[in-house]
Length: 205
Image 1: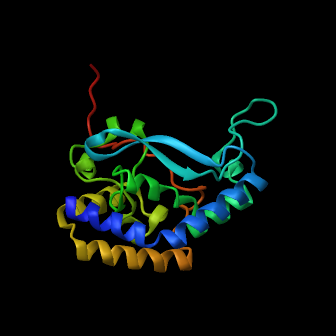
Image 2: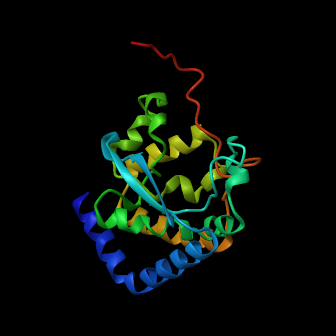
């Protein structure tokens, strides 16, 4: 893992002359058209389920309307935000998480903390490695892959990860970003919420 993180750091620093100016331009655009805040920060489970603060560019408007009623994600995503997501520019600040050692370029995507108690033992194995900006599940369909398949792909990556597999995933990710594939699940703004495994038994303490 140490070698992989070192490689990630080297790649991020080599690409800094490209992504730092791009981040600055994107941040300025968001500030002009969406206002403050420019960044979206949220706690996500990382290695062994430990929480860290994920950083992305903001793509949504207020969570409620003028009357105080909650808005769906589909109504909150702005045209600029939709474009940022389609180009994956909203993910750029996660390179800071990579430099901090909280994420890798490749790994299972960090999901919401409330999902932790819903995972089966096998699904929870996705936290045996650092989360990534992109991953094996992302190149198989991104947000169009259902949860069961997504977790199966995440665990497959945990068991088969290597430098060469990571490089393959990075190349295929770039291809998918160019083609803007798999941005959202059918009928959803992004991905349907994970509601647990119907076939698994849960207990309350």
